[in-house]
Image (cartoon, one colour):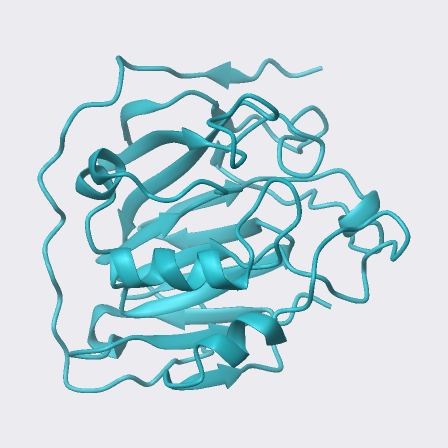
Length: 258
């Protein structure tokens, strides 16, 4: 079995924001990966594959059970794996192909010339007393500032907001349950972070075991954010360039992993 490398730097530090990118229009390209875009592939639940800058970044590979029972196992080639927690639905790193670097702790990292920051926040509404802490991951790839909240459940504190900044693309759980934002909490997080693009995660789909999954569908979140431009895309992937980002306001893009 190939050896996997776990990398950890020191504790989280206050970083300067990545900066704001203004552009003339939002286009939401679904084109293939290019050197000028980050391609985002939704593999289900909170699991995504990001490709750009010559780097493949996999976030939160899962085991197929409960809410993820009907999804394909995310056994994809990646150079780097980011893990928000070791709960069964987001920390399955033992059978990944290849020999990727795996980050599992909060802190500041330099990988292939890119900065990655893991920010620790509670994984439940009781200060982490039930499910421990969750790591939100922030980085810039192909010029696009990305923030993946993992399984966030607690309101975003002022300290966390300073570390997270205002992302270009925010990945936010919306399906509720015991360890992730419900629709109203997700809307409040969007209001705090003010991203340019929101991609919902961790909601009920046809892949779930209906008897054991406590999530609700993405439509509850969309009903609360109907003032925002929303597109449900009939694809699991989207490629985003800095010039695709809206110059102001927030748009919602729903990817289809099924």
